[in-house]
Image 1 (cartoon, rainbow, N blue to C red):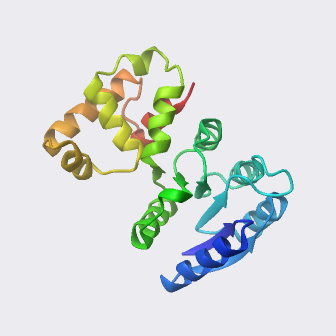
Image 2: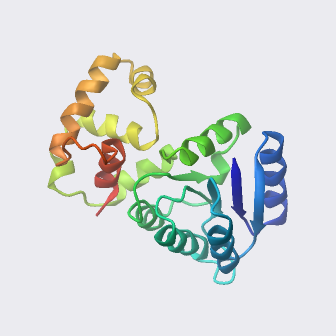
Length: 214
């Protein structure tokens, strides 16, 4: 994969460059600031961007804003956010800036290089991957609309795992139910969220967006 990396801490940035290189990926640019990130994304149009939320010069949401600005110019540009904190507003803003190809991972929960590479690949291939802790806090910290409130407890549980990027098989294994049961729950979730069959939209992604939107 062709990667643009945005991280202002030297040791972490250098470690990520080495890790990506060890797995055969090419780091096109490794930048430290929001403005440099936006320029690198629009110049290189990578397969995926790995972005720290808080970058210079503002050290607030500079990384996020550069990523969302790039996605306005390059719709669907894959972006994986890295953060030390669960910041629901940032996740919602990025998710609603396009359809899929986004992720949110907490730095202190990245403990397995292969799993992290798998997450990067999922995002690069258009998936939506959210750290379970991010999903949990998004779920409890926001007032969901009537559509989401219409879901049963099990359906909400299944949708939470969909938001984490799990397949039907993975959800079935985690919840100790059959894949047929998972498929049935998902087929019930879609109409409750007002999502109908479409040749152009990924309904799993749309369901996650409905789940996370205010």
